[in-house]
Image (cartoon, rainbow, N blue to C red; front, side, top):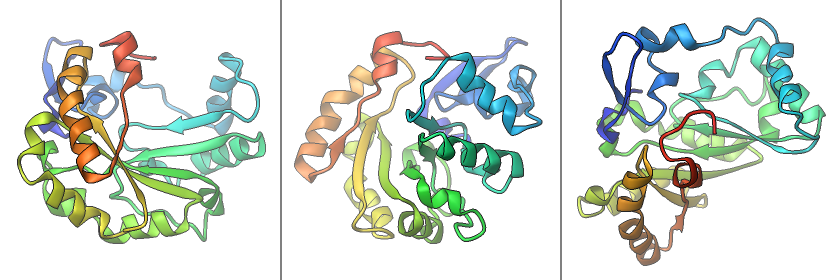
Length: 221
């Protein structure tokens, strides 16, 4: 998904301004693949943990782009199994449009899933961004799962409550978190107060974007 409705952009090496989500550099192959690092074994992924000298049993969050694109990849599954063996807690940041084979790859039953299902403000079509079967399967089989929606102030007055309700019906007992849209500190702050009031009124949880508040527009934080 491109999620161009979020209005975030990156300037590619060739000077082209690429519109998308706040991690467009991680999903746009045409303009950013030159900066991607190919992985040929699970040991290369585990070496990242060694590089940062992380202790055992820390939380590891896998985001993207969309990490479940690699859900059936042998190297990726081996990496997840190694993380669990080391005592790490794994959380996936997923848009909830891709299913997981929990029986073939039981390691996923030990993971937590943040179901960041895209709303209409992403400008992605409904049949692409909302897959009720995948949402239900993940929420039913994972160790834990919760919904997390990216919300901007303008969307709150445009039927947002009904839109969220139509998504969470696929797993009605799953908790709901709402996060302000924004790739910069200024954008996040502009969307925060209206969203907090919305969450208070609807009984949802507010989820901040602390890395952007602290480091603003910056990668690798």
